[in-house]
Length: 223
Image 1 (cartoon, one colour):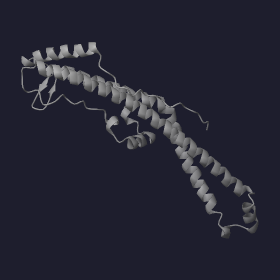
Image 2 (spheres, rainbow, N blue to C red):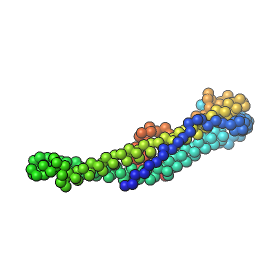
Image 3 (tube, rainbow, N blue to C red):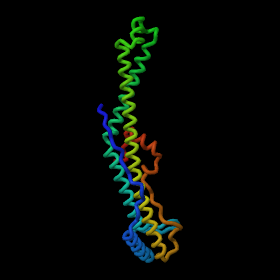
């Protein structure tokens, strides 16, 4: 199996700021939504004691979900070869370890002739060479598995950071929109705070558990 080297992906950590034009557009949309909602004609809006969901809030949520979905799909697309190699390598390692244990179990003094014991002690003979070959292959396999694990982890983390930053940016948009909406709304049923974004499941799951599922081939999230 050919060993390939990969450069770990980078992900900017600075927050995405909402620009002045986008801020003005959000505030204008909030005033329009508040005016329509006050007349009872806001199609798709929901007013209750806890939150308000307007078409604008729903659109921001949908855009954030779509961005996270693209990051997830891009992660799978870019890591497909490494995931396949990792699965094949794990199965090969299991077979090599089983063979090594079988070989070493048969080296008990009671099961060997004096000549065999002398050859193994001196580092000679087919049995010794086979064990040494398995040891080298197992070491190489573990080293490559560690490389692949680190690469998959770094790419997953980079995708997670990018998606999380987009959600953070969407949170800021909703905060700007919500402030203008409350100032313009004539109803007192606008809740105590801005609507909270619902983040994609793969961003809220335990990272190590999720990565283990990915390594084991559970790519049903792409379906």
